[in-house]
Length: 183
Image 1 (tube, rainbow, N blue to C red):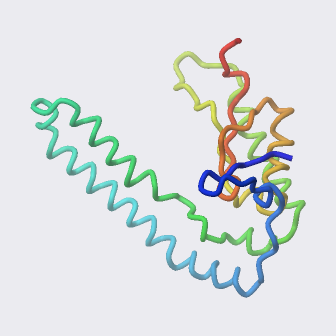
Image 2: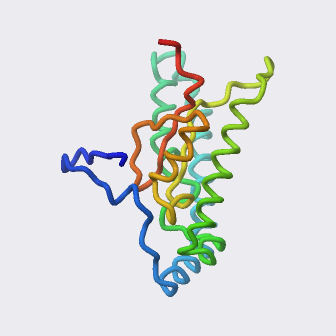
């Protein structure tokens, strides 16, 4: 079994690699209603933050000529603020998740489709003019909740993916093995 060591406790967390327990329908319905109401506001706040930060960056562009490293510092600020707000937060419940809670076949198909999509992207012939694709695939918890993180790793390994340091309670990071430098 794959192990994840929680740095805070120094213990092995095997519960994160197995399927999550089925959530009660009433709780899912409440989370879905909250998602429908709150998520658009969440996205508007994210867009507003982005616009404000880009505006500040444009106004303070003059500082890049005076203060060395200002631009890199401002990029770090943007990553720290906008990078922490996820597009789909962990508390959000979508309509398919509401309908298929506890259905392992649905989650298997979801994981398989996600991995197939990324495998096809990275194994396709390279176009010299196209931008370089990231060599890492992140599988969020909402994709493997009903089958567990171990299923993701077992399915990804034959496709050419390697497990990267991950927190299976939130997401599993996979690295494209073909992108690794030869040893």
